[in-house]
Image (cartoon, rainbow, N blue to C red; front, side, top):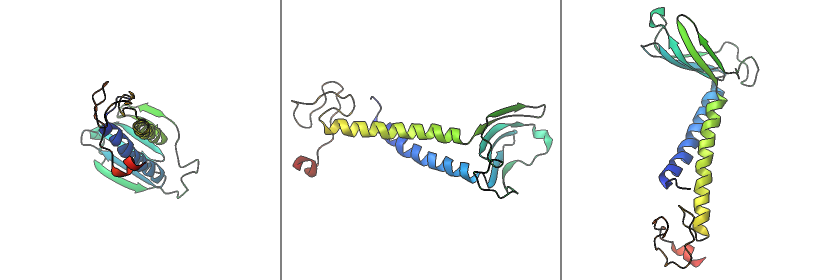
Length: 165
C-alpha cells in the first residue's frame, strides 16, 4: 500500500459523493432528459437510464446549449419501457454517438470509492497493531514517534486517550 493519505481521502470522499450524484442522475433520468449540445456539435445527454456522447452536424439547425424536457409517459423508473440497459453506438452521415447504460459509471465510481475506503481502513488497522501505516513494517522496539526505518514516515503523535488504552 503505497498510496498517499490525501489520495485515499480524495478517492473515498470524492468517489462517494460522485457515486451518489451519478446514481441520483441515473434514477432521475427516468423522468427527465437533460442534454448539452456544444456549438461545435459535440453533445452529452442523460435520459432513459443511459448516457450518450456524440457529435451532430452543426448545420442541422438543432438548438445548442442545455435542454431539459420531461418524458410523456410517467412510468416508474423500473418499468422496462423507460430504462434502456444496453450499450449502443451509431454512425450516420450527419451524426455519430455512443450510448452507455447509467449503471456503468455508477459501478466504476463506486469501485474507486470502495478501494479508497478499504485502503484507509487498512492503514488505520496497521497503525493500531504497531505497523507502519504506509509500508506495513513492524515498528516494535523503536522509540515512540520515531520514523519508520523502511520508508521514513513519521507516525502521527498519539493522543492522550490512545495512551490510556
